Length: 328
Image 1 (cartoon, rainbow, N blue to C red):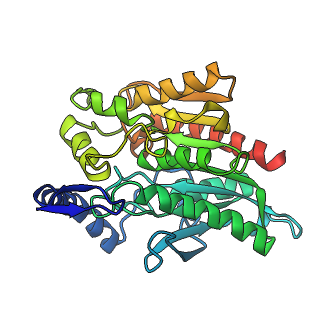
Image 2: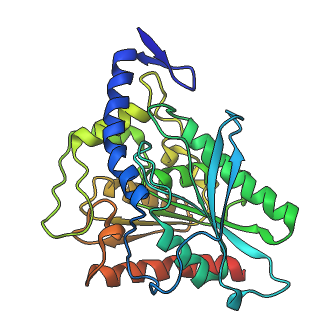
Image 3: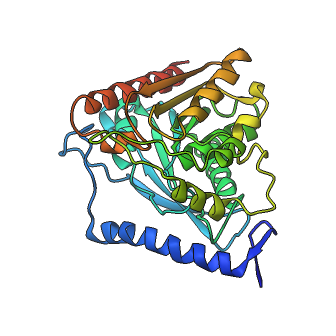
């Protein structure tokens, strides 16, 4: 027996059910944390400042109109707003392995950017595999970006000429892919936290073990987990050289300025280096912010020195790039 994917590809029903069960086990703790209202505090903002979104809205999926995509919207405080100011927009996509529902885990960073840069931040959800494999997440991310640009043009409150995009892990992959898909110059810069950029090299290196030293920030993405995420998102017949899943394969001229932030003990470390090197050779604006002895998702574990200080440094580097767009 076989099961049809959203994009028409096929995989065995047995494999699909096994992936669904494993995904459910991975998702269960996330649902518990959400139900209890627990949230990690990174110390970027005082606890007296709310990191709840200003409001939440839902937009239809272009591929499945009956399904809605959730967007959490963060506004800067009134103290930084001007009556005639059109706010720049930053769109953010959470990490997930393309599987785990983690919308909201970047709330503090989204609120910090809104407060520090003086921009609107859209923390956008997207479809998860294995129920909705590639290109469902990419399609949702593109829908979110197009909605933001359209909303800016329609309402006149946001600036459609000053839209930036970013994400974490799987979300960074989506941010890069969307940035090179939209009309040239639609996106002014990309902030990519530890992105997978080349699915071909990822698959070739899935068996590599990258040990993370004890008491260092981040998680150790082992081979089994990486293979699981791969099987969930990329169906067997998929052309994994497609730049929508391997954005490094896109024409370098399509990329806006890119900042990659990554730990050197992250299995995806080489992806950031490879992408930035390729873009620099093509004369594009690209740089890396590298954290030594840090694993995947290091920013979410950086609550004490020296990594808390490195996180603040990273956030200010991001703010500088977004402020440059704002002030251009």
